[in-house]
Each structure stands twice: as C-alpha cells, then as structure tokens.
Length: 335
Image (cartoon, rainbow, N blue to C red; front, side, top):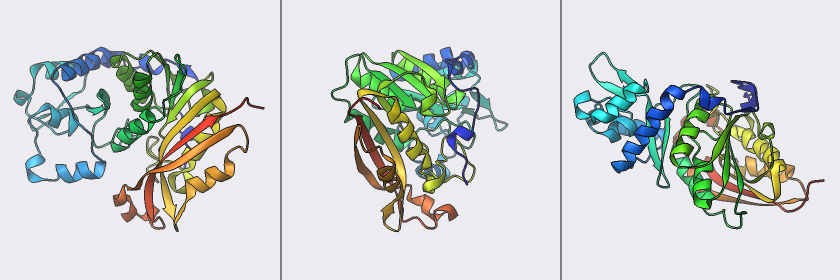
C-alpha cells in the first residue's frame, strides 16, 4: 500500500498563515528578485524532468553563463558572469551556494506561467518537501482559464494542494476581485505560494491542511492538481497513492465537491494510468460520484504524458499515462 497524502503530516491541520511565518528571511529578498527579473524580461519555461536531464547531460551544458542558466536550468555559474544585484539578493536570502570548484548555484528556480513569475524548487526535486512546477502547471493553468466564466464577482477560490500556487493565482488573476485560499500539507510550498501570490498582487491566505475538508468555509471555485505518479520514494508532491497513482485524485474530488457553494465548481487537472485500455481513475469517479446534486465533465487533455516513466517497474502493467481535466458543478443544496 502507498501512503496517502494525509499520512505525511508536517504541522497540525487547519493552521492559517503559519507557513508564511516560517520563512520571513527569504520573503522580501525573493519578492525583490521577482521584481528584478520581471524588469529584465525574464521568461524561462520549465521543461519536464526528463527533458531537463537530457539537456543538462550535454557536454556544453555543464556550466551556465546567464540568469536563465542559474535560475531556470539550475546550472552552476561563475559569479562574474552574473548580475551583481541577483547575486546579492540570493546571498541575502541564503539561497546562493558557493561550490568547492568556485562556481555558484541557486537554491531556487523561477519560471513563467501565463505571464506570471513563480518561485519553486530547484532541479532536481529530490527532497520530500520539494515544490514542483513543470509542463503540467501550464496545462493546469490553461484548463482553468477555459472554465472561469459565470463565477460570482467576489468569488471565493481555494487552491488545494497548491504547491507553488499556480492554479489559484492564475484563477484569481484572470477572474479579478476574487479572494484566494492556498492550502497545502507542506509549509515550504505555502511559503513560496504566498510569495508568488503577493508578487501577483492577489489577496490571499494560507492554510496548512491534510485534506480539503480541513479547510474552513465553502468556495465558489476549487482548483487542484493532485500528485498522480507511482513514486517509490513516496514524496508528497509526487506520489498519488493506489489506483496506479490515482487515489488522491479520487479522494480529493469526493472531499472537495462537498465544500462547493451552490453553483460552485471544482476543477482538477491530473494524470491517470490507462491499464488494459481502461482509465482506472475515470472508472472510479464514475462509480463514486453522487447521483444527485452535481454534474461533471471529464475530458482527456493529453493522451500520452511522461512516457519515460513506463520504463520503470511500478508501471509494468500500464499502457500509458494521460492528462485529464475534471469539472464538477454543484447544482443544488446539499442534503
């Protein structure tokens, strides 16, 4: 049995804004870094880990020379090749590593999603509390952008399992007038998500939570991008549990839709395993979805992602991994 997301507790549940208080020494420097990067037109797009690994294996890609190399590709650089302002900011935040070979590397990464800059964990994301952002984040943001029409003017938005906050921040930025709750099990994720939301000028709060039901209140929009991989290391940002990595996607759906206000909607982007031609997550959702009070649309966004994972033993029985979008609308009062 895989651990569930709720098995990986960092702090007591329901702790509002505690995560943002754990990293105040980095908050202001990172906000200054994002402002500086925006003024310089920084525009790094994060690839998949497999693509990043292939690029960085090239002999000419061992030492970087630019901000894109340092803060995007996570390459070590010569200090003299870098902007003194960036070096000073990273040093102030304790995020500039001086290597024995004289090169320096950054402890964070910055990527652009929907014209918003996001701080997240550097490559490779091996730590249990890593805050991942990659191509899934762009597909998630695009799916959200296509499903915002009809929300109330002062929408209450919850981004559960927020990570770097991409889903909630994009939703709030595109909607306008929304209040945003960023919830995650990982204090590091909430600290970075809060920085990203502040930089995007989004009114928000952060909540440490193990499951959607741990977050107080009802919401007009809930967005989530659950971990969906089979991860032998059981990293919280990556491992989706049973159902070939799809168990969290099922659990979060069933819990989150109970927190929808009348007329509210739940948007999920996730990955699903196709086994013997069957989508195991869709089958489970079709069986478990309440028969009244909700309607839903389940659609394939990309039929084949992370194909490199199929070489690994846990995926020996999987045909392919697909990206899907699920939109659930609450249609009536709960009984």
